[in-house]
Length: 200
Figure 1 (cartoon, rainbow, N blue to C red):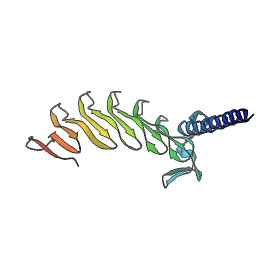
Figure 2: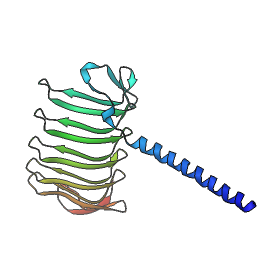
Figure 3: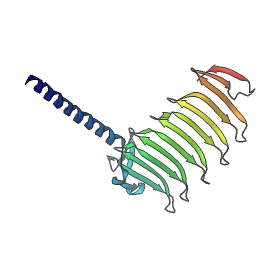
């Protein structure tokens, strides 16, 4: 009898643990995923709006949804998305002819993921990786002709590892490595000598 009671208690405990962890995961999933197709999309001229204390308000309420701006010809200029007043999801900017200019991502008010910029001809202008509002990972930039002019690496918002910068003509401007908080290599000094220095 006592053995049966222990087994029953074990199953009851296991049951409540499963329910507890399922509810935690469900809450976490809902916090990280916002389905904007069920939220309003409004034109900036159709509502009153203001940003205050890091929160975006529409008609005096923290805004959840998308708000967009237009060129005089009606083409979309930019789209910003918010959830409970905080920056969320994809933010976009466009050239007048519907060509993407910038694509940035936010979560809980902070920059996240891949941020890309484009020239009007559609070629890539920059590609940054961010996490929790700071650079994290690789960051590149190109000229309109597709010449790479920056290839840098970051960790927690600080330069780390290989860092390369070129002039628009392709000539090297800076080429150094950050290792253990120190900088080694060509820093882009006027006399173009190789030096090592403390990272700033």
